[in-house]
Length: 274
Image 1 (cartoon, one colour):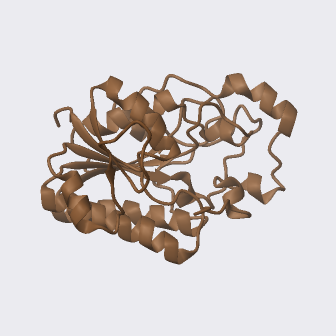
Image 2 (cartoon, rainbow, N blue to C red; image 1 turned 135 degrees about the vertical axis):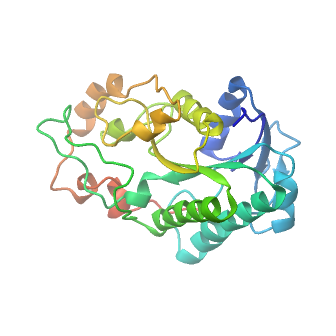
């Protein structure tokens, strides 16, 4: 697949979207931005709800690919998750199909498999067998359930319509990790841009699921399917480990929030504030 040039970035006003607005253009992309909220300094951004099917169709018209970050990114009542994450993602896929867009990069989440027990090796630096991408899905919230739906929707649109997707099960993408758990699933913003670029440009992806993180020393999951796309992570959370462990202590296997991949989403998930 030729390197796409014009990419629709949904959820462009959000935390991850803001980071990618700054970083993706350096990889050769012209971004078309979409969000519900105005974006400072971006007067040409498209302001539209994922429920507005005509606006979505116009937004995707003429783009080479879509990076779909829009939606609710924390737990919420099912009715809200249904509208934003499930119906909204369906509407986007339908718009892409109708307009002949060939590829979507879908922001899935580690929370689609959040009730997967985290690896436990002999030491934190040797966590044990890595979690494969084909591990059974075990969502930890309605939010995680919506990401499982998105992965299935992507598979359907590949099998039925030939629309390619890379579903990226994102860990935690911030400037630096903020918890001991995050040492294992952190993805630096620069590595996120590298992974999205690989997902946009790799050939013959069909529907491919990958985990999204940096090459962390304490890594919990298998990055081989991401590397197969051409992703070469450059960063590692380990420089932050000493300070975080001194402040928070090592993970406690008796603490349910430490026992599963999804962390505190399995026990006390953060609630979407809007």
